[in-house]
Image (tube, rainbow, N blue to C red; front, side):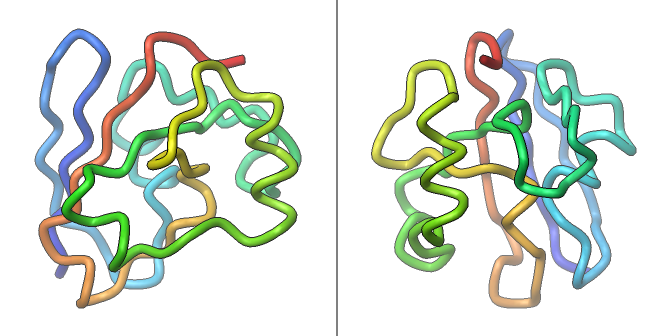
Length: 106
């Protein structure tokens, strides 16, 4: 089981053991991480699961696909490390991944 850390805007850390194949968003919702609204349920049709991938992980996780980039246009305070958490599917190579929740969702 890969480990995932989600840091809420207030600094609260959620250190989670997650299933391979699950998304960061699914794990955030399952564990009631504040600030992850996930209004579209993971369909990449909104930007309410926006997160910042820690810089040490951005290369490993990769850049967003075109559809995700389009949705990020609607996110609040987009940064170079911005991703939609519904589009990050956990795998063994992501063991230890850290993401941070922005101040608010768009």
